[in-house]
Length: 195
Image (tube, rainbow, N blue to C red; front, top):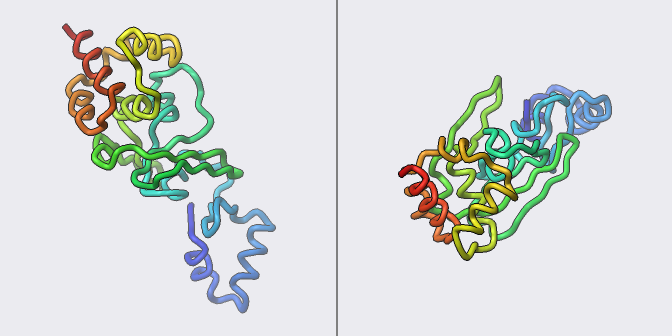
């Protein structure tokens, strides 16, 4: 379970020296530092379950979510998350894995997310359409549809069948929030594929 320093010190308040006890717990591998002020009690917890607690508000998106949904064939080891109005990218290297965070537009941030419960953990993840829009938003503007096809099919190695499963209406709605030519091109492309 993920816990803050203050939560652990409260739990250890019956000890004469709670901070000393916490240090011993870390040394004895009873809890594990994640980042400053944050600990995890289970060394084997999956990294993605910690992403929202490390830096936020955030949700899992970009490559990690695309891999999670099987839209791209590669296994993605870095947990990639979206934030808003942070103005800079963040990267955390922990014993649980690597976590990266980058901005998406504020208007797009709260849309098309799933809140998932897994045991005692909760996490937010972009739905497949949103994860792809987030990914395209972070890339340099593409000049034409051919470049978009090449990016999706050759670089990201997506399957046409997977793209056809995406909800064209959601992508069109999302495209209004990004002010990104890449996302607008995606909406047009998915619309054409449906005809």
